[in-house]
Image 1 (cartoon, rainbow, N blue to C red):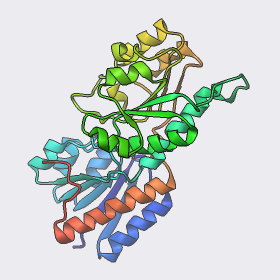
Image 2 (cartoon, helix red, strand yellow; image 1 turned 45 degrees about the vertical axis):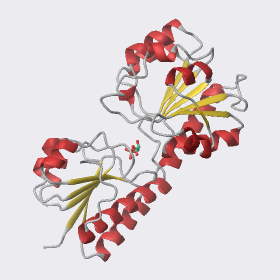
Image 3 (cartoon, helix red, strand yellow; image 1 turned 135 degrees about the vertical axis):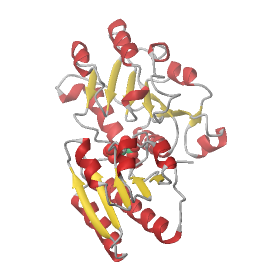
Image 4 (cartoon, protein in one colour; image 1 turned 60 degrees about the vertical axis):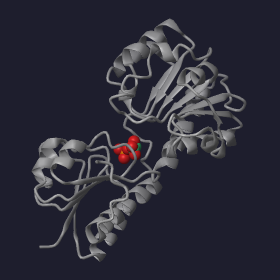
Length: 307
Ligand code: 3PG
């Protein structure tokens, strides 16, 4: 029986990416199976039953899904954040989990600026707004997306600062930003803060009232990371206390309706859109397919994220 590779995407890739993945998979003599826009976890669980490998996006690879995938050897998250995969369940079953770091990061960075300009120009409602030039932007975590944000910010003429505890000052400087040594220091001095931290037990709800309240008047928080890193109660209280504070996010918070009272000071994309470009779909999707082939044919597990 041919090796089966499943693409399971609630939010589908562009067709050009699916075609590219198909070419890679079929050139190897494997079979490609496609599950898009599924409406229940049960559909995903049924689809994984006999696959050897799978490619997902933000799709939830829970323990139930991993356990149901009796033949699964490798699962690749076509993208950066793998908080949607139960890594322990993968490890317990000897499944290798991978991501495709960097492949969709320019798309996410571009969307961050799309949202910043949209907010700075009052949603294009005709009222006088602001420019990004000359403003200070703090990039919270200076990895692949963060560095793309830094690059575009320099193009806008912004002053770029970064806080990343996993990088040295030299690395941050070489990547075009001024290093700062604590989140507190960065939030105190920056007009804009762009979030690029992963959602982990340590970071969840870490962007809270106390931290955000350090930001200067007219500050804007830009979230193209995960909603889980935000302390929603804290940000709602801050927006009530500070009529100058604005929040833009590439994913609606759980209590989106509660933000309606702050009209003109928030914007949420209707569906997570950061990585939703043909280019990012091709980059991440094809990388995922190649990583699957490299792993199944040669045991190459370079991008493994479970230990
Ligand atoms: C990522 O972690 O790579 C981004 O959040 C993109 O997620 P998506 O593939 O679900 O759009």
